[in-house]
View (cartoon, one colour):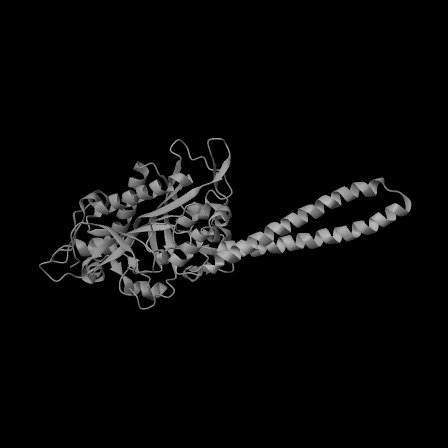
Length: 421
């Protein structure tokens, strides 16, 4: 949730954020009105409880008819307290509902607009010129015995697949290389739960506008995660976190991820670009709020370090406000060149969620004076199944073989993937 104190002090900044996202700015006024009603209800209930306490002492000293009259007034006062407390509970519920409906405040430097209004920060590498007609990743993967979407659909339905042989080796190589890099950078490696409770999913901001993307097990009241960001955010829920000498705590979560891809029917149905299940190593940081922007750039640098290892051209974009998730104040995506599509496609994203998730999940740290403060959280992709698409297409050779990027060779044990006879 956003900071209510900040909304009171600078409501126009929140209105501007809503407009940048393309959302209704009047929710800010509704939130402020609900906040005022709640504070008024709390004040009235506190005053009446104080009167009731003082009145109780007066009754204790009274005798005879005076006591009887006071007891009558005491019942009336008790009813007033009960009504005031009910009003307070209703005001609390109204405020909480409105408060949770407001997304994070967009960083002032994030571009305004929607999905197509991103700003390109930089290009790295040059798309390759082929002297033969390149194959797409599915044709390559089929010839290599690496990808089987037909049997994936037979077993799980559309957008499911098997990674077989060198395909499975390549995914494990990517994830292991990401885990090795993260560990070397000081991250604690985690294998996380892929089912989480509703309060954890809601706490990370995923049960808002995009709730239809999430698989839910209604009989168990659990959700399948679309990223290990969710369990890593919940790991320190209701805790005071020791951020250590670096003022940061960093985890790298390895997990299977599940997305319904609701609303994407007809898009990227070929191959393994947009699927219902994939694997990923995700970075997650807890830091002090004043350190969040610097940490965001660190996460982006670690992502680029991984991309350099797979030797593909890519670009970095600053995502527009209207394309940000509920929790993100700013997001950078790294998009790799996909030759057969003549387009850049997302491989990584890193988001600065400021204090939004930690406030919902009650995650704090102690400042220099030992006082608990709300932490900031950030996340970033370090490797995922989709990277196979960029590797196969960019490193294919005329005979249908695929050169293995040098950094991956120790993880797969070969320099070239050769088509099956």
